[in-house]
Length: 128
Image (tube, rainbow, N blue to C red; front, side, top):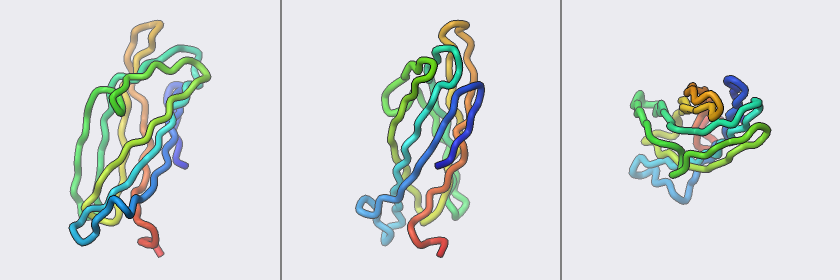
């Protein structure tokens, strides 16, 4: 599990390859990732937006931005967490993702960014 903490908000990531949804003959490799955002601070926060940097091992790059995650803009109370699962497809057997979330401190109304740590997307056996 990969983790990063910014301003008391911890983001942890686990990723898995989905062979049944993938089609290597057509350069389609599908991965899922599960993210847990834990609020270790003393303030309530809301996740407003996401920004992803997605890299394939062939050098292709995608920049993905949007409101919330999986259709939600969750409020995360102190000592609570929010977990979601999403997916990404690559045209190669290996890649990586990283990014940021735009959060809002609900008491001060200030917005701030937190880091989504870089994590690898690798088909099983590729590094053997």
